[in-house]
Length: 168
Image (cartoon, rainbow, N blue to C red; front, side):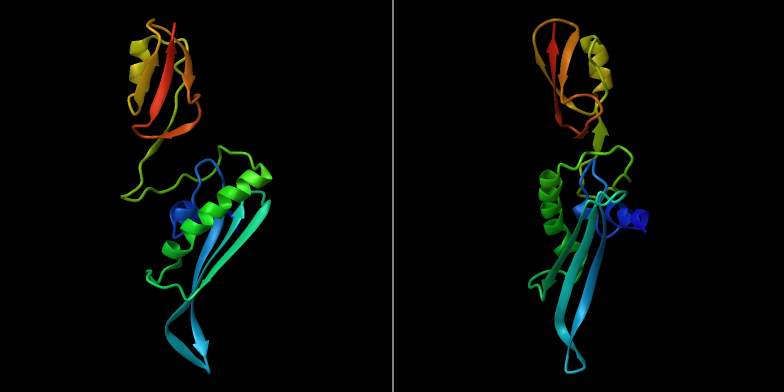
């Protein structure tokens, strides 16, 4: 069940709640409201339930919006961006650590791809350029050997993001 919930966030309707490096599980919900035994027209409850981390839950979030206005009638557009902001606060408050073994998010047309940053410390400038072809590089120093990099290797960064290299 936890794997299925993680799949909703990485690959399904909960993608707006995805947080790089954290295993988030969730499920969206859209319920048409009833009054006097009859479904109400255009009156819904949009919801999203999430667990973090999905493989060993430390927190559960349930978010419901009663009769949202001026939005698509899909919880994936209404609740998940709000849930993501709350989940970031939960991760920070509970000091939940990043994990490497979560599901990768299926990208949508508006998403900027991310790439894992390789280690270029000890490489020449030319070797570093080849390994960092997906990123923008800023240099400090005038040498030909990389002695430090930021962000560090192993982190993920958006394509075109800036990596700073300190040269000898």
